[in-house]
Length: 353
Image (cartoon, rainbow, N blue to C red):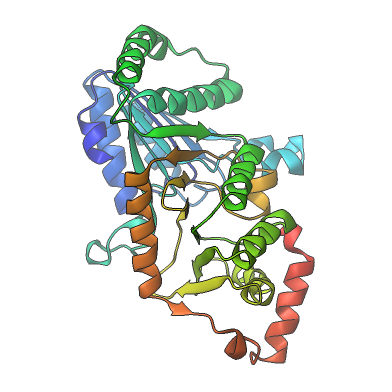
C-alpha cells in the first residue's frame, strides 16, 4: 500500500475507519503528504469515531502539506440523532491512479504492524486489485465523499476515459482474469454469504473477527454441516471487545452439535473478515458477521470466483486453523455457570452490541 502511494502519479483515494496518529499513521501520513507535494491529488476519508484518539494537529499538518483529509460524520453532527451517529464508515479502501486498489480489514494503525516494529501483529487480510474492479472501488469512494461533502472530482473525471479503455482491454483479454465484484450494500454482502453457503458442496471456511450471526446465517451453516459439507469457523480466542466474544460463544453449542468445527485463534487479535467456499468462491473486506455491519455501517467487500485465489485463501485459513485450539463440545459444556449466564445475557442483547 505504501509503495502504491509512493508511486502515485495522478491521484490517491484512501478511505479508512481508523487513521491513528501513531508510528504507522505517521508513516502513511508522510507518504500521502509527499505525494500531494509532488502534485498528486490526495483525498483521505477517515471515520471520526474510529479515529477519535488521533491528535488534531496530526491531521492539520497533513492538510498544511496539501492532503485533502476529512472526517466522516464528526462529533459536531451529534444533533442529527443516534441512528445518524451509528452509521459509521467502516470501509478500508485504497485506490491509486485508477490502476491498482486494495480492500480488506486493515486500518491505518500500529495494531497491524509486526511486533518487531512495535506493533501488535493483528491477523488480517488485504486483497490487491487490478483491472475493472478498481473502478468499482473508486465509485464507492467517490459516492461516499460526494454524499458527505458534495464535492466534485475533477481528477477522477479526467481519468474516466482512460479507465474505460483499460477496462475494455482487460475484458477483451478474457482468460487470465479473476471474476471479481465489489459489494458495498450491507444486505447484498449478507445475501452473498448465504447464497454461497447454501450452494456449498465440499467446504465452507469462514474467518471472522466478530461473529454474532443472525438466524439465517446460523441456519445456513448448520444446514451445510448436516448435509456433509466441511464447515470450519476461525474465531477469536481473545479479541479487542470481550463482550462480543462472550456473545459469540453463545452460538457455539448450536453450531457444534450440527457438526460445525470451531477453531479459536490464540496468537494475537484476529481481525480478518474472509470466507471461501469449495475453494472457488471467496470474499475479503470490512464486513463483520454481526449487527453493526448488517444494520448500520458503510462496508465494502470484494467477492470473487476463481480457483487460484480460492486455493490461496483456503490454504491460509487452513494453515491458521492448525495453529489454533479446536473447541471440543464436551469440554465446552463444562464451562462455569457464570460464563453460561453471561453468554445468555449477551445473546439476549446481541442486537445492541
